[in-house]
Image (cartoon, rainbow over the protein chains, first blue to last red):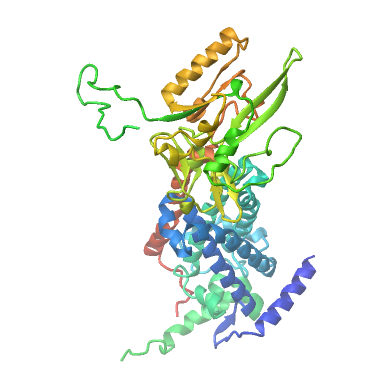
Length: 254
Length: 289
């Protein structure tokens, strides 16, 4: 099973990758290949469409402001389940693509145990065991997987209440609402972590590359795996060298 | 129907009775249905289809005398037939005209997320406005009487209007006009309720139905369609009339209280993230470039 998934992923990365490129400049590492980036942004667009069309019907306060985005109430209602189905369908490929690096392990429990340090920026670099994804990223991934399953299982009775009965549809609507709220919180945190909270992270999903400094800071075990070098030693070296380096990155200064 | 008169209902700091109060009849309307005198002629079904300009459609035979098993999006009025064997072995043929009950507390209206798709008039009529309906069918799950019906072509939901167009012009609903036995009547809620109570008392005291009563369920604050039943303790016998019709809590507590609070709490993640940035700052790569 896992072997088949791996073979499919490898083939997909190769085929989709042939349509694009990832330019790795000096001092950078490739983090997300073309296939991953295309999947991520496809899923992201469908996610936002499903989120906005769903919250349009969530509350009467949002109804007036969000339904015009989709051409009015009836079309919002018509499109929402299809946005959801398209999101789940595309996310299935994302799921297979990331199943291996997202697998939860003992190191993730350790990371969760010291999440306070992470949130307060207490550590200058992440613990040496943090690999391609940290436990927070994995948690977000599995929250999306879990809520997507809830959305599908409850959305279908809500779509066809005449078949499933009014009580099934009503209970489904409650779980659908709860899943949406959980997803909304997780999505807001994801937006923040992927942009303002960690400079350099956003480029990993647009250009596909990260700076080596970013890699040994946030994912030391991954850095060690792909470069074969010691993240701590490289960091110490960069730290020692830095003052003597002229600053080419400050154009315009006299 | 007189309307627009400024009739005082309450006066501030006024001791004693309110002058003029109660001189005018209330305007809440009600349909009275005496199932004990219904003969199952289906004239009301035909009148409903005729007045509302519905197309002819084929009937569905299901081993009963019913025109079809359930009301449909374009068949709002259906007599439900039930051959009921009593404890003493005798047979009773129960017929109940099924249509929208026009609840005082309508589950469909509570459930509806679309602005203006369902309105309730001060006279008690609950009416769907199809131009605002988005076809989500929440009303279907909100209704304890299985009344709103979805049209998968127009993507809209339809039901009995209590002939709001006729009532607005001072006429009775079409079904009432067509009834040959007088088992259907129409008037103010007070009058119809009094008539129903009197008829139920007559059935109890003179016709050998000790459990006769009026179906006007308090769980939805009463309805603007009321039934006189031979046996008020077993409303289910009359084509599945619920003994205790209830709106699912999702459309009362959940929609009214929990959902808005939940949304505010979820959106609170945004200011938390913003102030995290303000207070802790970004996590730069080490050493910073």
